[in-house]
Amino acid sequence: MRITDCQSSLDTPVAMFIFNRPEVTSRVFAEIRRARPRQLFIIGDGARCDRAGEQEQVALTREAATRVDWTCDVKTLFADQNMGCKPRVSSGLRWVFEQVEDAIILEDDCLPHPSFFSYCQQLLDRYRDDERVGAISGNNFQNGISRTPHSYYFSKYFHCWGWASWRRTWENFDLNFRTWPAFRDQAGLSTVADSATESWYWTRLFNQQHAGSTTVSSWAYPWLYSAWAQNALTILPDVNLISNIGFSGGGTHCTDSDSKFANLAVHDIGPLDHPETVFRSVEADKYTFGRNYYRDSISRRARRMCRQMFSGAGTAAA
Image (cartoon, rainbow, N blue to C red):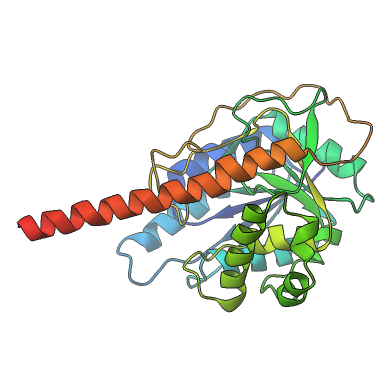
């Protein structure tokens, strides 16, 4: 549909994934509205039949995400029944990349800085034909440590809270880890991991994903593996451009309101200063693994054990 005669300013299509949180969705949609993309894809999951009141929340969320008052080609893909995070996002991405060559992707709780959109658009154009680069992310989890004198650096780690990519990358997406056994058995991780611990960590996780023996239904792990299998890097900004505002409740994976990743500050990236070469920041990647994957995983397991112990103690006392 096309409405009003307001000038659109963003040529790159935007895809927004929504579900059942009208409040956070409205905040993220307000930033999309400010960017005024010429084309907007809205993908929504259906309500779960065992959750009272969720159908109404889903309807309110869809209403909040479709209040388009600028000239825009709007396409919607709304599920009648609940699909779950992994199949809904992966099928939505397939639908988007069947229609466009590139896109900026936001989920309902990923609040972008206004400069995020131009950052993505410029880099999508700059690296369009460079297969060394698989995606562009707006996340920076380096806790204020600058990794480059330029505006961005290259990483082996893909972060999914606000990102952009091309159809050419999507075409290599291995949702079900079909190629993982061959990659693993031919020591593929030795070309990626920076330590034996890192190799062990991802081998264990990818084995679980491949076998379906995990409670984490995520499309982001297959995306990360697919990038590694293709030897593709992700562009990361030297300042954080995305704040996840969904830790307060209702999210599928982001449920810890005390998480260090919740509500991170965002900053203006300014005019882009491009690096002259494409190579990954090993130090940044080591920091990301040690601080944000391995240590965070241990901390989460420790917190779960403490909750179980105290819960058991309370039950016994009662």
